[in-house]
Image (cartoon, rainbow, N blue to C red):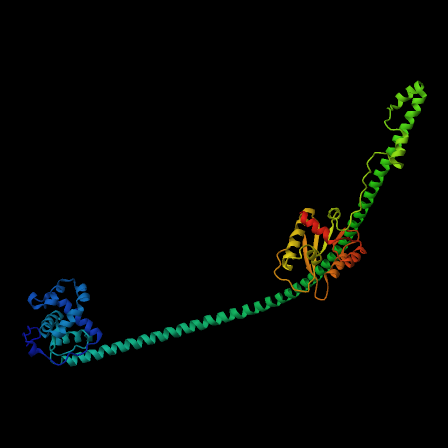
Length: 451
């Protein structure tokens, strides 16, 4: 039978062969493409039902979308494969006729030969398929080897290029390293010079700070001495003003007596002295010289006894107010000596709180500095904040509040008004020797009760 003659129809049982071979991927794809191209040429009744709708697709779309279904139908339906094979052989021309005759032209594509042999199934088609598969694998292996050779050549070229670039970069890096080392040397010299300048600046700053501290201390001492001198001069000025006032009063009384004497003399002269009286503008006096003598040296019957200023004792709150009115006065209070006399019924914590609160009111009224001292035998924690201008102190372990009060008095500059409130006679005598004003605890208690 000629290769171009139509193949006889065969039943699946007659055309059935051994198990289907495994096709190389290029052969499988080519078989699917040939079957998809030949599918529209078959009569409608020869096309399997599952492929009839796909037969109307465009060729490219048919091969892409119906390829899996066509390959499955070729494997399961020998009659459909035979019809497709006959159409593919006719479309392939001389190559199809040669393959149908069991020959494989040497110049033909082995993939094309294997695809036509698989579809047409001539005698020896498995051998043609095996030879085509071996040729395909050889081509694949050759292409892989060629690709590996090309990759190796490209890697060698890149390595040579990289080596040249690396050599250039290494030369650049050596030059850069030399430049960096030179700059590092310069920076080290600059750092040493900067460090020396910094040390010299720090030494100069320390000397300037020492000089400034010395000058501040000297200025503080000068200011303190100046303030002390100002207070002393003000005290002397007050004494002088008091003496001047006394002198003015005595001069006024002497002048009044002289005026009275002169007025009597003028009255005895009479009219002869009228011109002189008008010249001196002297009016009649309501007191005679004897009245001035009586005021000073005698008591008049029926006249009330004139009150004399009484001496104020150390428990008088009025004297305490007078002392606190002195400029820049410092009030020092023997804490427990006052609280145990005035608030003995309270707890120690309440005594301290009551006294500190009252001293805060005195400090606010007078603007004076206030220090309250307590014995520190028991440690006290959680005290409320002291009011403004009020200092709260506790004596150290082994010391008493009395000794701390004496130290505070000795620490004040000479001439500053210092008022110490304590009913302890030793404290009063000790602070009095250092120029302070001792006041009894009752004076402060009465002063606090008045606030």
